[in-house]
Amino acid sequence: MITYRIAKVEDALRILEIYAYYVEHTAVSYEYVVPSLAEFTERIRSTLVKYPYIVAEEDGRIVGYIYASRFAERAAFGWAVGTSIYIDQDYHRRGIGKHLYEKLEAILKLQNITNLYAGAADPMDDEDPYLTRNSEHFHEAIGYKTVARYHGVGSKFGRWYNLLWMEKIINEHGMPPKEVIPFSELGASAVQAILQD
Image (tube, rainbow, N blue to C red; front, side):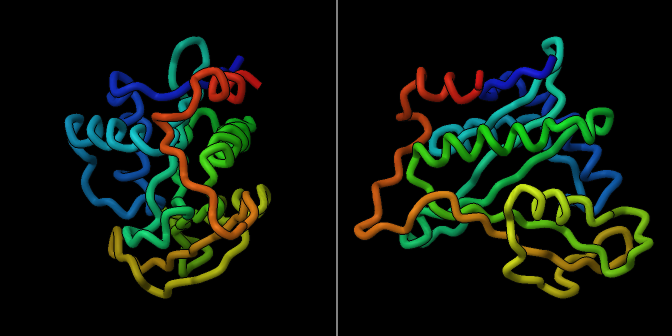
C-alpha cells in the first residue's frame, strides 16, 4: 500500500538516492553531478518554507517524491510555480505519479497558486538511449499543455536536447489576486486530509 506524507529533511538521503539515478543515467535531469547530501538537504528545507514537498512510501520506504518551487523571481510571478517529480525506477506505472500530482495540486490550490509549469526534457532523436517522451505524455495525460519548446537548449552525454515547458491552470485568475499563503502557514489538518485522501 502506498501512503503519502510531507517530506522531512531527514528523508534527504533516500530522496537523493532516487534522484541520483536520473542525474547519472538519464537526460531527465540536466544536472551532470549528483548534489551532495548537504546541498540536497538544504534544497528540501528551503522548499518547505513556501511550497509542498511530498513523498510516497511503501512499507516505510520512500518510492517517489514531488515538490513545487518558485517559477521566476520577479514579484509578478508569485502565483506561478514549477513542479518536479521523480519516481523510483522499480515503481513506475503504478499510478504513484498521478496521485502525487493530485495531492500537490490540492495543496497548491489552498495556497492560491494559479499556474503550474513542468519543464520536460525532450529528445531530438526518437531512439535516444538516455531519454524517452514519457514525461511529456504523462503530463499531457494529467492536464498539462505544451506552451513552449526550446530547441537544443541542453547538452548531456554528448547529445543535444530540447526543453518543453508545459502548463496547467489550477485556480481562477481573479482580480485582485488572492494572497499566496506560504506552505509553512497552512493548517496541518487541511494538509493531512489531502495526503490521506
